[in-house]
Image (cartoon, rainbow over all chains, first blue to last red; front, side):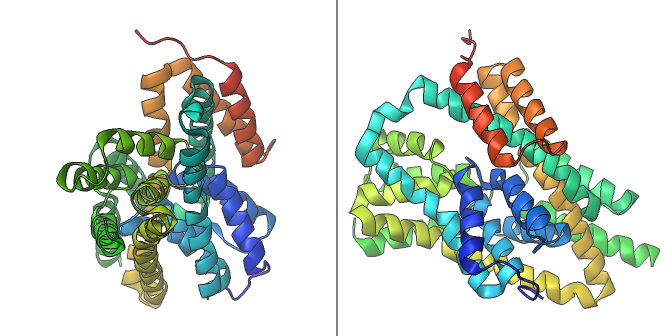
Length: 180
Length: 180
């Protein structure tokens, strides 16, 4: 049950999630930092739970980063979900400082290329995280096929994530019915 | 634009557009710039550009910036919460559905397949982050940064935040090749 083995306070959870969202520049780029803190360092979340949070967060409408709410819930129940929501939305308000204060100055070439380098690094971090998540999410040839098919569908087609997740669920149920 | 109208626009578009941030920001631009004339194209461009360099989820930063331009702080808070809160509730409901299905073997099989698909989703997110960068700023720079970041975290030499900081420094110092 969510929150049953929470060993971090909701405040600390918020700070850890905020650290992850504040050091990323796209929705899922916060994942490596979240996994490092909550799975590896504090042991309050399993890879299985992290995968489930990702799947739930990506199966509905809204921003990619909303999966952080599910992560918070998995760690500390409803208060954790609130912490996750606040961590997801807090960095968004930094744009007001940019709009009010520095304006066009922050769009300089050096800053742009710095951010692009961070995004490239985030891609590498996500790839490394995939290896750890696969250890719990891929348990045989069938789940490996589902993961590969999901990757191909999401990278090479414009199909929505919702349909990929629903398709995976249907495949899983059908596979179980056929193989018993 | 009245606050109630602002809330209605962000609620409708933010919660009915699937596919992540870019389609939602495009749909908001169509509504706010072309249909309602609430923002001019230059304001939209500034908010869009600054949202890309604001930490966290770009789409939420765009909503905060556009809401602030339209109605100040109240507009920013309403825009972000109307876009983030309903999807968060939907995601939590999906997570509860996942957990409730664990007692049923067919549902468990479906859930395991969804979790495997989430592994593919994370790897796809990695590819979708780095591929546009490669096309825009050259293959060598982005591929090298992503690969080095992958190795540093995978071998657990550095934490994700340390890797991102190093990548940012490298990006600041290493000028991008001029594209033809």
